[in-house]
Structures are given as C-alpha cells and as structure tokens.
Image (cartoon, rainbow, N blue to C red; front, side):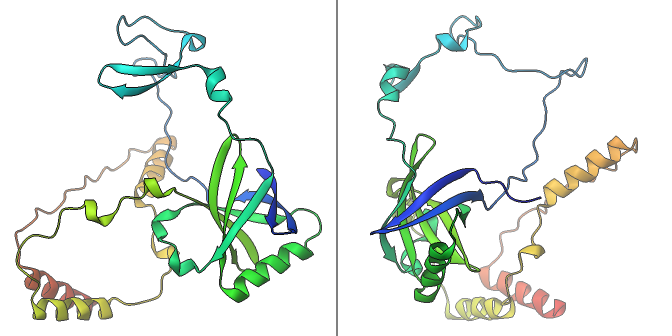
Length: 259
C-alpha cells in the first residue's frame, strides 16, 4: 500500500523553496489492549470525576491549571491559551547547516520522510547536495498548532526530517552520581577491550526483535484458535556480587566458545 502524506510544507533555504510532503518514517508496534469488564466482558470507558466528591464531571466543565506551589495553581482559560499558539505556516525554514557529528544524538526524536510535492528537480538537488557535503540542516516549522525544531538530512537519495528535543529537555551527565569504588585496574581495562574486539560486528536491525510483542501475539493466536496456551514464566537469575575481572573473563570465554 502506498504511503499517505500526513502534512504538506515548503522547505525554505535563503531564496530557494522546495515543496514537500511529510510521511511517517516509523510506526508504533507497541501492543495495545482493550479494557473489558471482568464479569460480562463488555468494553469499559473512563470518566472524569471530581477528586474531592467523586461526582462525574462533563468535559465542558473542565479547565486547565498549572501548579506554581504546593496547593496553589493558576487556572488558564482555553481562549487565553488559544492566543499563545504559534501562527500557522507551511514553511520549513532552514536556519543553518551543520556537521551531524556535532549534534548530540540525545537531541534526535522522531523521523519522517519528506517526498517531493510537484516538480522534483529542486527536491532531489537538495538531497544530493546534503549527501555530497555530508551536512544536515537545522530547521524550524509549525505543524498542528505546535512549533518544532528538526534536522533535515539525506538518506538513500531522499530527504528525512527528524524532530529534535529542546536544550532544556536534555539531562547533563553531571547530574549523575560520580563513580564510586576503587580505580579501574589495567588488567580489567585490557579484558574489556578484548571483549569489545571479540563482539565487534555489523549492525543488523533484523537481529533485534520485540520479543514481548511476539510472545503476546503467539498467545493471542493460540487463544483465538481455542488452544490452551503454554505459559512459561520468566525467572531471572539471582545476581551475584562478583569481581569485575571475573565477570569479564567469563564473558570472554563465552564469546570464544560461541565463535
């Protein structure tokens, strides 16, 4: 089935304009369940109720509020929030071109394909130029009442747009507790490097499946056919307080036996 565009825009870089269509580049494969009443197996739905009285509340009677202190909130009206929304636009504005290696991977979020909308010459010229120069564009745009920052790059001859997180969403490593314990020994470092070398290989995404989803779907299929499913409970091995060099040595031996 052909992909369906979910939005249209125009890439603007200086005086150059490239009309594009936006397509999803990833899909949600998470297992989603319907909730049923245990007794009669009928679907259930959630209702809004007062946290104080437990009485049901109509959605039209609900207001948004932002907590500013313990027990204090500022109530915001829909009309007030409406005036704060960014102005609707179809422009995907390139602010600068950067080296991808200079962008921390934690900033990247969700990927979309961009396809040509109309004349494709400018589109493929942009894709080829980005690939040749090994650059990506940092862009800004508004879509569905929300302002986005993203990275524009070329992959396999096409343009890809990746939404990016903002700087205040990134947690710095300095927020972590500093390492405790004794300094790393030379032997431990050497063994860790040997393990890295032994496990080196090409990345193949097909080697990594969502095993939980596969087990759930096997269970669903078995029950749909009237079969009695066989449930194998997962029992994690108890952790041991082992020395690092012993753990590395055991890992190396296991890799060598498998190769």
